[in-house]
Length: 249
Ligand code: FPP
Image 1 (cartoon, rainbow, N blue to C red):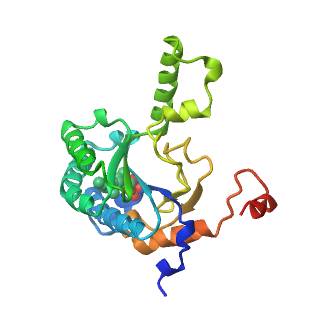
Image 2: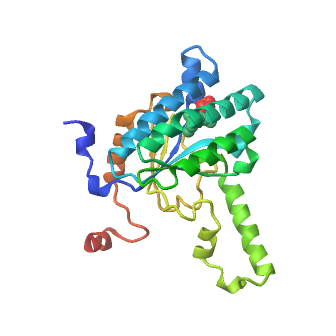
């Protein structure tokens, strides 16, 4: 029996978010530069997406470039941008064939024009697809997203469109980049780091966390399945007590 067979397909998270970490350390271990690790990281993206397609996962959000990543050495930032543009360009036809819908969260206008152009083509080509939603977090940070949400709500109050007393959780959610995406039930971080790093801070309020020592370029289908099994072993209480959950199920 393979590990995939152990998964309860009716109880897979519909949204998995991943902080892909450890490319640099993986490359160093092999005696190569950091970009070598990022290049191999793309292989893991491909494999994990295929694995997600074999379960009931509907949304896969990948933290591919954070706002803070601009502070890395120029050579690495340029290399990462180049890799993103090339990967999106190379993969979009195949992704479209497998019914994947591509979208992004983050400040896409702040990315190089070449990246914006590849992304626009990818959205357009895959917009009617009904399979897995691949959400790339690019030039994303949660504090940036929440700051924008606050500004947009303030503007709506200023223009008289809404009243302060009417602002509630739904109004905030509607201003987030993820307004059309359910919150992730499961957040995975690779490489033995136990941080959230400014990723989906609002959206992970009730997410289960799965941390693994595996470095991202080594993270493959079975690692995703293990994370799903770990998720399925948890009891999600949403602030209630066990007995209430048992009654509801
Ligand atoms: C973190 O590892 C990884 C990144 C900042 C980049 C992740 C990008 C990819 C895997 C390419 C993905 C491409 C697409 C199209 C989704 P790190 O460099 O922080 O590793 P370290 O902690 O070992 O230094």
